[in-house]
Image 1: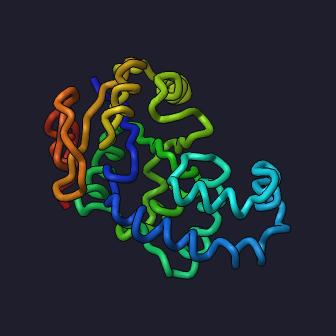
Image 2 (image 1 turned 30 degrees about the vertical axis):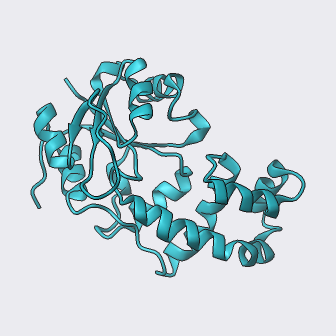
Image 3 (image 1 turned 60 degrees about the horizontal axis):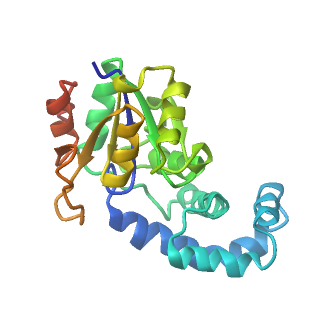
Length: 225
């Protein structure tokens, strides 16, 4: 019996293109101006201190390589916050996502997010989404501070944090290596294979083209509008 759902974002709730073609370029273009204006703010200064020498050079290198570095993700989240706050950015969600999240929450399921993007960035996307503020639906948000998504230990830590046996937690992602790690930790898994989003079915996990299909496969409530 599934009692909780932990979902990835990129490729699962939101188009890969939104992250790669909207959020990442926005942060890169705004980096220098943001650091010039906020480099001495306590939160930003702490991130820069964590990075060490040549922070701008390192940040740009990490951006170019799409590295899952916590300091980078935290700073990107702060830059995106400015964009979401003034309406330049609106969080993309596939049309089926919000109705299902609302139905699952109303049905008593615990909902959480696990993404490489910082917790702050996750809350921005869901808080300023095309479907409105969905953050109240989620009990918890997890990022790389709990561990890498391809590490079974991170998924075990999430289960412990949620206080549920791993088999009662369903992890949704488009990336098979992340699903493999979740299954190794004992979680139920489902690969979300969005048409036209570049995801390749692995054939080793349950598969669904959208959230209503996830609901149907696991006997969960399905939001229809």
